[in-house]
Length: 64
Image 1 (cartoon, rainbow, N blue to C red):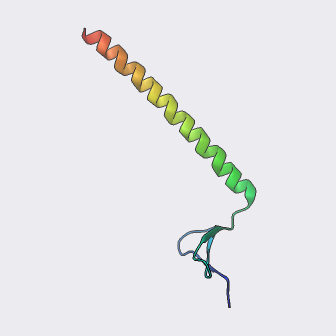
Image 2: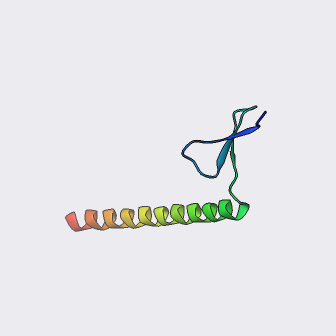
């Protein structure tokens, strides 16, 4: 019996038919690259939040 089946529409993932778990078949360096990219996006988002807060503060000062 086949242990893994391909997840439809998702390259790099298979389903373990015994447990139902989704397993990544992507090479480790690909996962690490994705992790680094995710951290960069989170960092950029935090920077945007800080900048928006600063803009909001300046607009409030301008209104006064």
